Image (cartoon, rainbow, N blue to C red; front, top):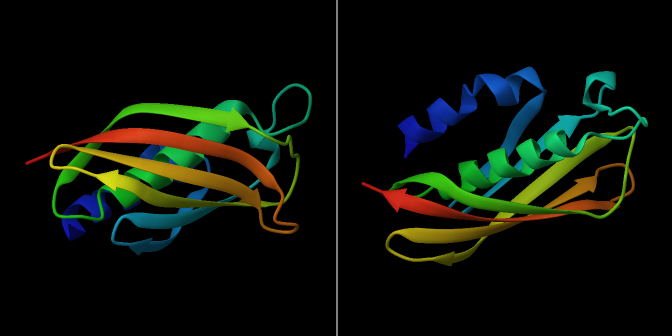
Length: 128
């Protein structure tokens, strides 16, 4: 487990956009991203791709917290509230775990007021 998580902590893209891992447990993870001007789209709100990456990355951390390596099969995001500033906190939890497939749900909230920004669902293929 530790080698997979160490590799995820070195994810160049996640690091380049300011995502950090706060907590990792068995089948769950928590992370954050401080919103900066580089995260904003043309109308001044956080770009959807940044939100997707934040949730997808933290779900991958949760999925790789167990005995098998896991790779994403799909991902779906629902944008709930547009935001332009603050710190985003994402929590990912396991929904189900099977021998080769696992599913995760995540919520992205703004830390300052706990407003729900987006929800995310994904499935992972568990290999090894």
